[in-house]
Length: 121
Image (tube, rainbow, N blue to C red; front, side):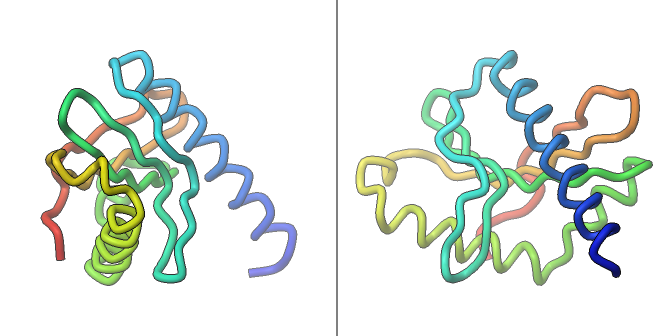
């Protein structure tokens, strides 16, 4: 992938994450972090609603199935490890239920929010 396409993909992903953040806020979620980087990987969005702490992977795709299946088992493991890293530095979050979600952003549609997309790996 050349530099221009890589930059375009980065911008598309950043816009998709911003849209998801606003969508989640409208649904009553509190955003704790965006693009949380760890030595083990990155988590796109970390949000909380009541006693549920949610780690969200955002995919910008043209259709829903491509977006959902874009989160591979390798990515799930990486995100799960990054979530455990996050929790290790947040002792006040240990009493929450943890959930892993996927949000798919498609052109001219509201984000699709797939809750509990996978379990901790």
